[in-house]
Length: 60
Image (cartoon, rainbow, N blue to C red; front, side, top):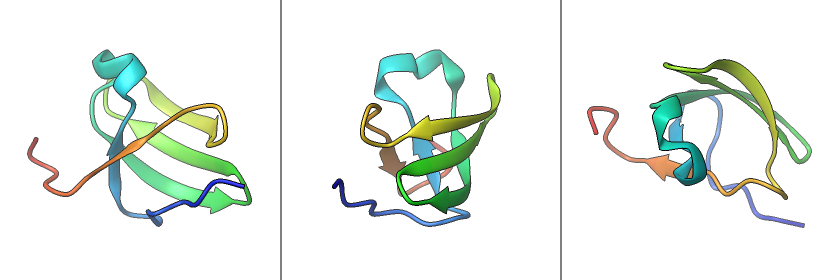
């Protein structure tokens, strides 16, 4: 089981898909994280298959 170090409201990015832009975590249910990306829209991500990186400064 992977440890999730972010919570709803936090900003993240998907290093494998940088063109999605900045994403904001909407919800976390078990290993499923719903993120709304600025260039891709809302998507449900299985955190065991995708490595999201938390963005400390949302202006990055």
